[in-house]
Length: 232
Image 1 (cartoon, helix red, strand yellow):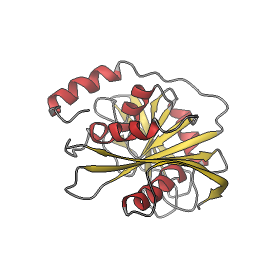
Image 2 (cartoon, rainbow, N blue to C red; image 1 turned 90 degrees about the vertical axis):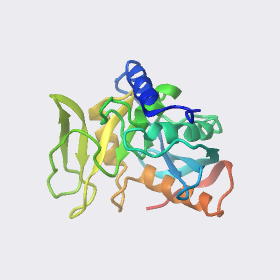
Image 3 (spheres, rainbow, N blue to C red; image 1 turned 45 degrees about the horizontal axis):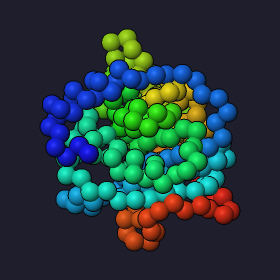
Image 4 (cartoon, rainbow, N blue to C red; image 1 turned 45 degrees about the vertical axis):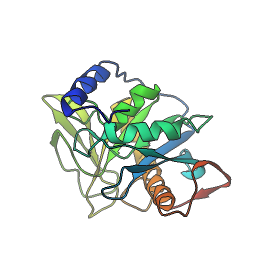
């Protein structure tokens, strides 16, 4: 999908896609998805997965898995070009879409407002949230060392996201609206997704399941969980 793109091409597309971003509250969130990618170093095969959880219970309802071949290189700020095509292939396997999708990366907390969550959200017309493990951009203010504490991340006066403390004595995660949701609602939803780990449950569960897929423990396709599982 993007293998022939240069980074200059990618910049241009990100700027164009950012013009389509919309931020609005969503109501009656009952399901939330987590999306993640796993791949072996120096391999072109991407292992992609999306898990669907009941919200706010955080019980696993279903998951979908698929592979995708890409030669687009990894570079900070361009994660969407490497991961979004694979995630869209998984998305096509899901007939009943979740209310919101959390991606392991940034939303508008990005130099061109087009992190992987925003990129995926615009292309799928889906409400998305970015939840990154490290900060890419913006002026970060460290939140207090207490669970659920947060601090704004700004750039030139614009609110781009929040640093959210999910555990005491542990580095925060970085939450930002992706598409079709507000910054404030993104933060509120992610607070309800915190379990016993640093990484909130949607992307943590996605990471675990995708790794099992990459190592051969799970097969590609859509999988419905008959009895919803809580994986705290």
